Length: 281
Image 1 (spheres, helix red, strand yellow):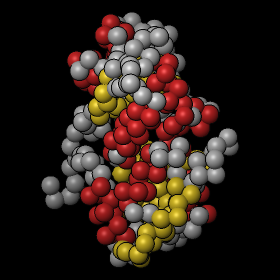
Image 2 (image 1 turned 30 degrees about the vertical axis):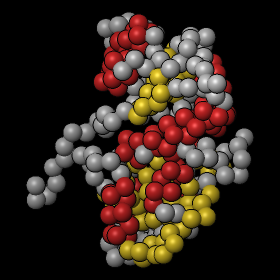
Image 3 (image 1 turned 90 degrees about the vertical axis):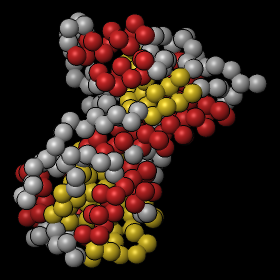
């Protein structure tokens, strides 16, 4: 017979799926607010705990909002309701909705952000670019693997564009459009810290988000304009892809323990950019 779990029971399942010890030292993951003995009947997934997402979750009657990005990653001295973070905290508490973050632990875990990207792009024989110090061999930041068949950089970039949710920024590419690529390194979210790891893994192309000018320029100079080529995508888009898979995984894990919970995924686009102007537009 199924029954409604407490928040603590949901947290125990989340810890099994996305262990907190996989998070980076600088990260802030886990429960942000909520009563551990409260019942959880509805869970809402989203990338960012922005006001529109918080309102969506509370209006839907969610008891728990799980976001990839933390609300309080950087320290605050006040959650006064006149600030946007304070307003989010007050809205959630007053609605009885707990908030949980699964950030770099969600990136590194098996079945996490990077594994979902690999699956959607058809990569095989994948491994982490940077293995987690306390995790399994298959856990860690980034992934590197191979396409079943090689393709051109341009066609692979088009495949990436087709997989990602539509955002203003599109997909930016550094490299010869007709160059052959088969070995792919990737990191969902901001991954310029793994540029050297992608090169050491002998990747033909490295896919990530938020590539800044200097790290990208220096990586291209170091490679002499050759491999690994670079593909820069939206931070939000690269991580949103994980949400449906994460929701399904959590739903199955809760059901295995005879817990009955309704789970929804936010469709709100929280990419911060609204439009882009390019040559010819």
